[in-house]
Length: 463
Image (cartoon, rainbow, N blue to C red):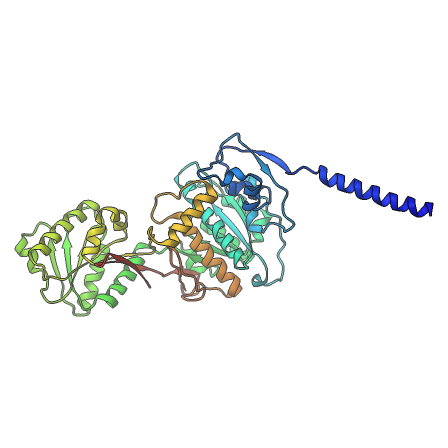
């Protein structure tokens, strides 16, 4: 009996000791002193916790207008039992010293059955414009990974700060680089060749996101290049113009801009019109009102094409057209413009609507759309900053690129070619569809016409 009593007593003491130890465990793991430019998004990833867990431990973060300040101390909670996903481990402001993604050996598991290993080789710093733009683009990629995770697609992000004066080969020597399934980058032409060779040797896809015109796309099947050279863009614009506006009466207006490079487009369009036997007229901003009027058709829709992208000449042309419309309200006038004109939308919007304007581009940032508003709000919440006031928005570009690319790889694995309709993703800003260039890589062929309609609506026509 005494023996049983001693056993029960021992169990009671042990249970009490365990309960006491648990009660004495600190409520929070530690406190973090905020450094300059740190964000809630970055700190949560640093400690392997979710943003929601961090905010729950610091209720003041829910206060409207709350901002992290250098020198503040914030509570770091114990992580939940569920491990943090790989993409959450990626730093919000990466540098080569901050990469802390566990190495994962190459394996035979189909990419469609595991986390996609994504490398980012771009300038990710705040030293100059290139770095700031690419840092915002990278943040868009992280946001896409968060959204993909909610849809059951896992990613494993590792990032390198590859600045303009860097030798990319030093980053390619990192064993983690060879483990990637896809590398997004580079930004600079001199880095394409070594990265292309590395990708071939290691069977890695390379996604080149910005304006690099490289021979490697012609010979390396592993490359997906977003950028379209201007002459190829103009060819696409001409083709779609001919398909859509062949029943209009084209009127070319010489705006006397000696700096203009738009002659490449207008000459190509005129040549195609002549080949199809479509009549067109050429006039000049300095022409008399009577001579100007004679260039327009009284019975067909007149499609006006200027030979400039500059604001000064656009203002003069709009004034001339408004005067013509006032004197001859029976005329049907539409305008076909240039991507540059998107920069003038704030001042020209009423004219764009009035003259049923079409602007060709490879993107459309509709700042009034709910999806654009939501992603800008989420970016502000995650990074305590607004997106740069650029066209296109770089964070949204990063989101569109990453969502399209990574969802495609998840669905099709190594058979993903980025063709039209493969992914089923409706972009917020930047549509993509790729076509094979001979036996080489894949190049984006998607273009849009942004249509400003007289009923004061805007539509995006994607080709």
